[in-house]
Structures are given as structure tokens and as C-alpha cells.
Length: 497
Length: 105
Figure: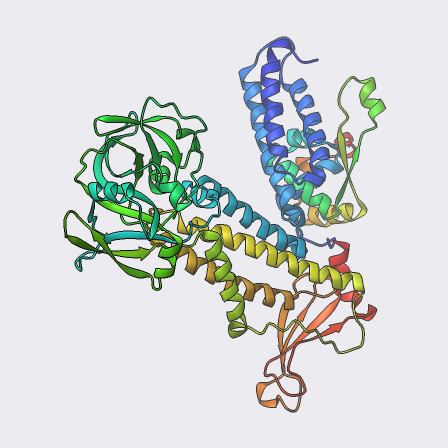
């Protein structure tokens, strides 16, 4: 029986042994633990006097237990096969799919943590209302400058129009914005008429169903939503201080919503109280039936009658959908990569063998299912990794994310598909392991007289792959040799292990 | 392992200790003065080379003595042959760890 006050030391020594046992190979760990535990019991009985505490004895027992680490390490070195997974696993189909799934999971996790990716992937698919034009004064200097006074917009809106049936207005100003607790930053704020988004057909995200009317509503642009709020939808409903005024966040604009001028951070919906009625802005108009007939080109000339005999010339530019979303870019690049694939590798999956022997139908189906699984995983990880690369560093409203996604998605899908095809050709048709141990056979100078190329073997002993060094008319593509039972003695050791 | 294989002095001492009747790890440590981190790994290697063989004590015996069962080691035939050959290399081995028979002489 253990002396009472020695139990703490005993527990300490047992825990030392338990930690050391983790080093021992799992197959022999239980026996190793049993032996050392028994030895510890006897050492303690021999060394520690009954009913007393003996520091030298405890120190000696501790030294005894520390020796267990060396013993367990020695045991592990004696069992090298156990210390690592079987070599055959690394070349197996399961390992290939597992590795791809791990990369895909990592890509998805990173994508979920990036606010930019969350924002662009959460944007609903929509199309702008057709027959929209942006009206601006016909001045040759700057197309993007605001040129239409608010008063003119009110005049147009009040009078019956021949070519247009609805108008919306917005002007751009710069304000200091406080986002609560943080230092104020300078934002580009668009003061917009209330009908702007319904006219354009832009769906608002996370919109408040019944916003309180005590404060004006502000609709966050996608870049500010990502940059300042980490794409957190919980921000909707909170109050922003814009200049001297408070406004409530009522919704978020979809990313890459519309190609309107100005990189706007937030849209302040103010139906009646513009800060300056003479401020110039932009007018968006919807073409009437008659206007559509007159709109024969992307830009039309508009003459507006002013006070008295004066007339003012304007341009009406057709408004197109915004930039393509990430899904459209992804589909385009995958399509492009599939078209380009024959340029970087042969896509033929035809199999030939030295004999008429063929694997069973189920094995052939497995092989095709494996190929399909690899392609599916590759396409998924291409999507997520290209998004991760595109939206990790650059502002969401710049051109960089689009360009990076375009290139990353194309390169990943092109060279990924190339790898998939090449990997499939090196898989044993029977067990789907990668063939290995390449051996050069023959001389290039004797290609037409004898076999010249590389031979690879399936480590499970199913097949031998012959790859010609120089394709000839009689041996142009790789061939499989299905090994019969006479080869089994070579693989006896590996199958036993 | 071949009978004429050369053992280290440590392995030879352990082999001689087992031959002398010190048949579990702690008693071999006590007899040889070697630390646990040397004795147990050396015994693993000797067992791997089929010079010694281990066997668990019957649980009923251990239960009767109210203690955990121990793992005992004994020499194999190859171990005895190797020990004989090793004694020629280390003549003082028998004097360092005498057997019961040698003690009684």
C-alpha cells in the first residue's frame, strides 16, 4: 500500500510514465505501460520507507521514471513502420481525395473569414431594369462630372415628358463620418432621391422591414460595408453620424451594383431636404415607349427647353449592368481553361494494354468516379482559393480583386485540370494507387529496334506501366501490363506488412 | 543474431545478470548499477535479437502477494551461446555478476 503523503509523488511519477508512454508505438503501448507501472510499484516499495517522506528516494524514483522516455523512444525506433502511416496510403486514391478535401476545406474556411468574400458571394443575382439612361449636360470635358442642377431635375419631374416616364437624382458630397467610437473618416456620400434604387431595380440587402422615421435612412455601399464593418449585417439599424447629422443604416447595396459615376461609400436618402438645391448632380431616367424607339445607339442627344426660348443640350447614356460577379468570372475562366487544356496536355484517357485482360466493370466505374471526384474537388477549390487570393489584400471596389480572380481562377483550373489528367494516367487501373519506382529501359538510339522508355510499377503488384520515351507508330501511348501471380513473390513482404 | 556477435559491455552485463538470476528490470539495475534509461532499452534490443525472452508473471501469483505482476526475462538458447562467447571477450564478467552456483563455490 502506498504511504499517504507519498501519493502525490506517486501520481507525479505515474503521470511521467503516462507521458512517456505516448512516445511508445500504439501497438505496444499497453504492455509497455503495464511493465513500467509494475516496476514503479516495486521501486517505490524498495526505496521509500513506510510512513515517511524521503527526498533522496523520490529523486531516485524520478530519475528512474525519466529513463522511461528513453525506453519508449527506443521502442518506437524499433517499430519504424508504426511511426508513420503505411507508405502505400500516400499514393492511394483515398489519400489524393483526402488531401484535396483538406485544401478545399482550408480555402472555404479562409473564404468565410474574409469580409470581402462574404460580401460578394452574398450578393443576390439580379439584373438592372432595362431602358435606363444617365442624363448629363453635353460638355466635352468630363463625362463623370455632375452637370445637372437639382432645380432642373425638379422641372423635368414636374412636367410631362415625351421620352421618359420617371426620373431619379443624386449628387455627391464629402462628409466626415463617425462609425461609433472610432475616429471620424471622410466618406463619399451620395444624396439620392428615394426612388433611385427602385427605378434602377437594385435589390437592397439586409433591409429593415419597418425602419423608424425619426432619422433619415442611409444605404451603405458595399466597399464601406466591408471596409468599416467587416461585412457584418448586424450593423443595419445602427446610427451613423454624417457630418452634423445622424442617419440610420437602413440597408446595404449589393457589391458591384451599378456602373454609376463616383465611388460612393453611402447613399443618403433625402427626399425633400437637399443641402443645396443648386448643387449639380446626376439624373437617372427611365425611357418611355417612345423614348425607347428613339434610343438607337448607346448615347442619344437630348434637347431640353429652358426658361423662355433657351434650350440646353444633354447626352443620354445607356446604363448597363455593373461588373460581372465572382461566379460569372469563375464560370468564364473555367470554360476558357477547358478550351485551353488540349494546348498544355493530351486529354485522351484511352487505355491500352499488352493483353486482352481488362479490370472488372466495377473497378472501371471506380476509376471514372475517382476522376469525377477529383475534377469536382478541383473546381470547388479553384473557386474558393481564387476568391481568397482576390479579396485578401485589395479594396473591394478596386479593379484588383476582379483581375486577380480572373487570373487565379484561370491558372488554377487550367493547370489543376492538367494535373488531374496526368495523375489519372499514372493510377493503377486495379487499385487506383499511383505507380512508382520509375526505371529507364533501353536506349534512345535503338528506339526502332528495341523497347525504349520508362517502366513504373504498382506497389501492390497489380500492374506495370510502360511509357514510351519516344512515341512511335507502333508504340505511341502508354500501355499497362497486368501482372499475373508469378510476380507475387516480389510483393510478399509489402503485403505482409 | 550470430552467437559470435560482439555485444557491448552494457549488453553483456545485462545478459550475465539475467543468467545470474536477476530476471526483471529493476533487479538488473540494482545489480549492474546502470540507470533505467540504459537497462530497459538494452533489454528491448536483446529481446529483438532473440537473445532473451520475456514472460509475464502469472496474475494469480501477483494477486496472492498483493502486488502488480512483473515481466520476467530469461536467456534463450542463442542468448546462452552468445553469453559464453562474450565471457571470453569480457573475462571479468562472471566475477562482476556471479551466479548462485559460482557464489556457493
